Amino acid sequence: MDNDDRYTRITLRIPKDLHGQLSSTSQTTSKSLNAEIISRLEESFKAAQPKDEELKRLYLRVIYLLNKQKLSKAEATELKNAETAIQVLEKSKST
Image 1 (tube, one colour):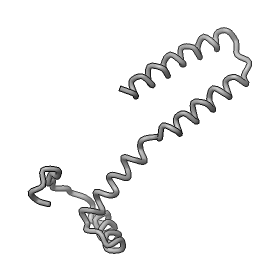
Image 2 (cartoon, rainbow, N blue to C red; image 1 turned 180 degrees about the vertical axis):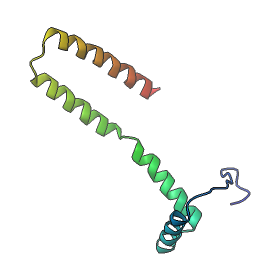
Image 3 (tube, rainbow, N blue to C red; image 1 turned 60 degrees about the horizontal axis):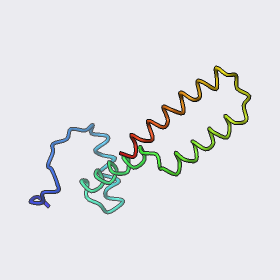
Image 4 (cartoon, rainbow, N blue to C red; image 1 turned 180 degrees about the horizontal axis):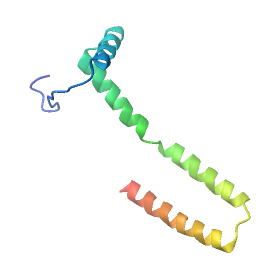
């Protein structure tokens, strides 16, 4: 693995108690300490990104709830601006 161009070697300073927890968990899961750290980092990135299905579900829920409201003209105009912002965000997400 040392000669593999897919990897970068780094020096990392972490608190001793965190190192102990990682070491203990890596032994329990039969992984190397390095593999345990990589696994946890990869999972943290996956968890931080909402799924497309979840975003669509939330968007539809917002639309449903907004349609149930009786909005004034000013509020409706505000929503149009919010809808424009959502469209811009969706376009930037797809690029």
